[in-house]
Length: 70
Image (cartoon, rainbow, N blue to C red; front, side, top):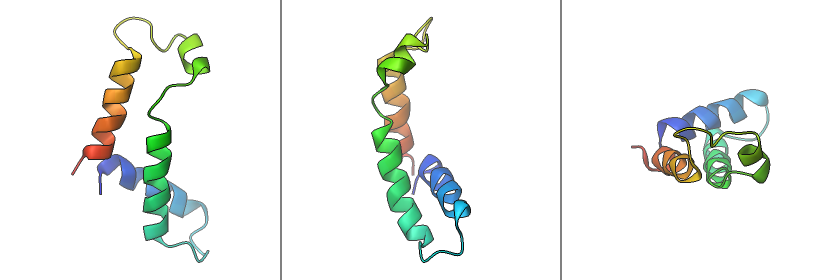
């Protein structure tokens, strides 16, 4: 499990730790959430996130790295 996936999973799990939802389920959903974030939205682009050295390719590369961490 990657550091980012685990961080997101822990945040998801912490929202309702008494449910039947297990940490395993949280990890599955965390990975799906991070994968869904891979492509920036038009609003993110419009907000100026891509000013300077940041670019959509850099953003995707960072998300890919989070998905590949060991």
